[in-house]
Length: 337
Ligand SMILES: Nc1ncnc2c1ncn2[C@@H]1O[C@H](COP(=O)(O)OP(=O)(O)OP(=O)(O)O)[C@@H](O)[C@H]1O
Ligand SMILES: [Mg+2]
Image (cartoon, rainbow, N blue to C red; front, top):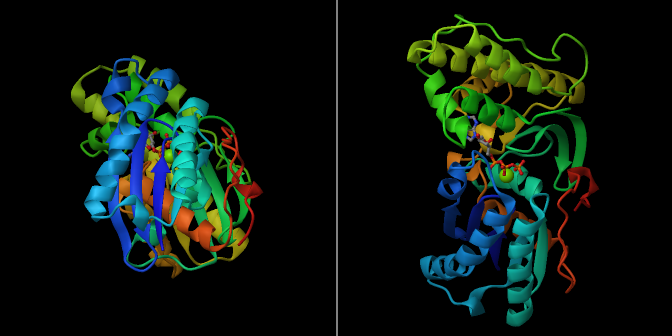
């Protein structure tokens, strides 16, 4: 069986084809980063219009990459939420309509389940149960995962997501959108310990996060110090270390609380090298393992939607002919399979 996966929830148009036995046959991605760069963030209407322009050519490109025609596709999966409503509508309308025209089932995929399952596309996938840390541009969540669809929220950010904090702090440091990866690159040349940022909400019990204070702390530190390149790199380093440490402390707590051995990290921030290294060291020390996807599958992509679509399709979770999207959609509302 082969599933065509479509991702259009934000500023990336992603299309992929996943084969049940052969694995990933095609993966096409178009990033709108340049389109939004002048505005310092995603402009929803521009995002929707660009998905309209790029989606069909990308579907053609994916079929060509896999050397297939639409007759070889057994189902169409598309991101139905959460995300920007207009952007979601493009993928859902095209995906649902193609499935109707091709007379195959459609699968409405939860974007965060896509992120969460992305590490399953790697050579050594995690096995259940595990604690998942979802760290992206819009989410910071710790989840107990006992099976596909059995997701229990353990804690989440009460304000900014980790990726959002990276992007906002990067902006304060004069870096272009999206600043997260740029800040990480700058931090690599920073001096450890020249500045110390707080580790928010680690001094009290619980698994929630708060990252908006770090951005303010960064703004004050930038204002109170010279604006040379090394100072900026040192501030970037202190910010990154604070986010990584905070995530690490909470992951450790979640593992203690659940008694689970393994950890999965997913979403754009899971591409962060510093985070990967520190979590790997921590997990080795605990006799467990940390699993993550290759960097291209940490940020938005069609492959994770095609994979999640295949899993849901096999469990019989197909969509009816209505085209519906859910801009807000808690992961815990998904049905276990
Ligand atoms: N190496 C990195 N270090 C830190 N942050 C990073 C890195 N790479 C990407 N990011 C951050 O990841 C985020 C993008 O990830 P992703 O595409 O998963 O988020 P999103 O799709 O916008 O949000 P969501 O999935 O919650 O809807 C951005 O905030 C970006 O700055
Ligand atoms: Mg995402």
